Image 1 (cartoon, rainbow, N blue to C red):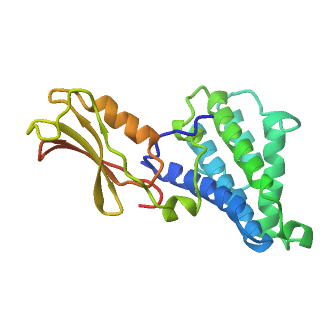
Image 2: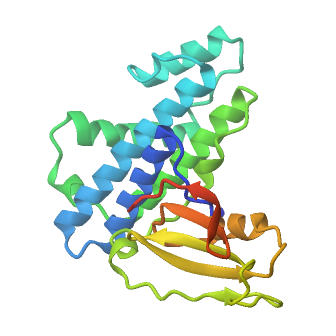
Length: 239
């Protein structure tokens, strides 16, 4: 599982997945059982919606959500695909997650279920991720790459102090009017990430920054001297 998946949230489906990851992170950071329970419940209900949408997208069938198992089986049969095995493996695990989701959304929750441990949020993310990948494989399609994203710092991502370090590459001179600067926007301010010698293609450096950045930035800019030559807008949780 890659934890360095670029967090450019460029569609609503991925947005929901980051909601689920964020809820899981908060479940681990909660300082009391009340908050922990809330965040575990949020993880399960949101991750379940992500799975429903994935099944609808993979099969191009918009009516799977209601009576999930029945409608998913019908959509698969309609396309003459092999049946899912709900008695074992990943889809048996999905059934257990569905029962939890129904408990939290439609039933009176027992005292034992009010305060679940945070590992239940972990297990939910693992199962839903595997099921999303499985349903796309089942219909012969590639699963969305964002499902590999497994990283969210919860409250920490927005509250920690950030130390900005600028990397000056060999051959670069800050005073050269043609020097290449890669900067990112963080909390409304530009932070210089790297300074490159004139004539260097900055593409690989920009891509690496997008992949590895751990704070919520909303843009990466490339300057030649003081002139803006390129800008990449990003949607990241926390911006």
